[in-house]
Amino acid sequence: MAIREEEVGDLYDKRPDAVVVSTGNGMSIDLGDHAGAVAKVRRHVLRRLLVADVIGLATAAVLGPLFVSTVSGNPNSAVGRTGAVVLFDLAVIPLFIGIFALYGLYRGATRRISLSVFSDLRNILHSLMVGGFLFAILGYAAHRYYGFEAVTVGKIAAMCIVAAVAVPLARIVSFGLMGRAPAGSVPVIVVGTGKLAQTVASHLRAHASVKFVGFVDDSPLGRSDVLGELEDLPELCRRNDVARVVVCFSRTHPERTTEMLKALSGKVGVSIVPRYYELITGRSHVEDLSGLPMIDIAPASLSAGSRFLKRTFDVVVSSAILLLVSPFFLVSAILIKATSPGPVFFRQVRTGRDERPFSVLKFRTMSEDAEERKSEIMHLNEVDGPLFKVSEDPRITRPGHFLRRTSLDELPQLINVWKGDMSLVGPRPFVVSEAAEIEGWARKRFEARPGMTGLWQVSGRNELSHLELCRLDYLYVASWSFWWDMQILWQTPATIFKGRGAS
Image 1 (cartoon, one colour):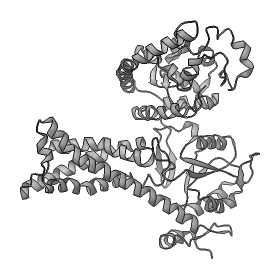
Image 2 (image 1 turned 30 degrees about the vertical axis):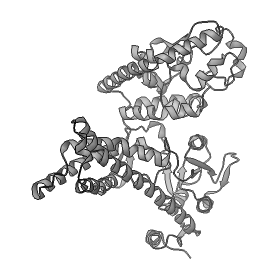
Image 3 (image 1 turned 45 degrees about the vertical axis):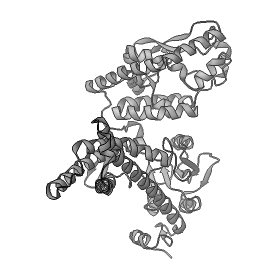
């Protein structure tokens, strides 16, 4: 049986297990089982999110008033609250859940490949602010018209503050730290087999919550993991329970690709990589021109206000971390001196902001004559371009292996951050010889201070090509936002813990 495209949505709502899609070129593909499987996963995600949010809000409703009473010096007032007051506090949980839904905290989560608590944190905080305001109105009304002493402004504020921690924490516990998949890895297929498709596939393979299924292309470029042609895509999605299709460039006629994607729309998530993706940044947005979507290319610049905010954050945080890790500095210094001759710190000239050279600090992880021995192992270089990396470098000392694998050798760079040579987040700090070979648009990276971590750190570290490193650095400078810095800092510990791309 074949149905018209406009009937697919209605039929899917009534019978998700019996949909037969007409692709527009004579093929009829039954997506019933797959649609039901995807819908089941989405319901599972939604249930987990709702349970986590209810637990987080209930915890805040109990601990918030207790915190206020303890600070005010009368903890017994919180313990002795009447059952009616407690029930009133808990009864507003559906209010907050409704606001969460209005902010898309449930709708968007069921469509994404992975769940990241940090990416939702801004909307969670906004929702709590709006919910707290409405809660205050309800509390005032209950007191004004019914004489019910249920809440105070202080208790509402405390509840929202506790919820700002409890709700994200409950989501982390529910779904796993750093966006792990809630019900196994999400199967994804890539349309196309060109260079971009390979780059996308490498990112998907590295993502803990994604299961890269394979490529689909009518004219594959010699890939061994090509699953079939474009007309096989619906059947492949059904067979592998694919949740999302990522469309990259291919030599298939766009009209044919469009027809196939229309057949999948609503049953499988579809992501399209824009043709000029190198120009698109986080500040770009979609404009509408009489129904024709257009992507605005935002100017690539870092304003004076942004620089001040970033620098202030760097000074405050680097100072605090230096105080906390000072005992580790002492232990590392003892180990380094005890296992090999030479200084504790390794100093190397790097190119910083506005192409000014500076001396970067690291714990020494190699033998004292490492630079003299570099020519002996030059043939072992594993990366392209001007970079030099060897995973099994014979010059590395015993404690150096641990320090490099965990990136703890870079902790002394906090001193560079405090001095202003570096930033906590920024482009990769290239040595002078490597930086001298960077040309054209990639020189945009020199408008920002190099960072201890950055997009290059959380996107693959030494596994990335030189061109990909330059592209990520350009993207970071062009799209900078304080919130993005926070997200990169959030992702860095997990990346270091996994040891991906470390050497």
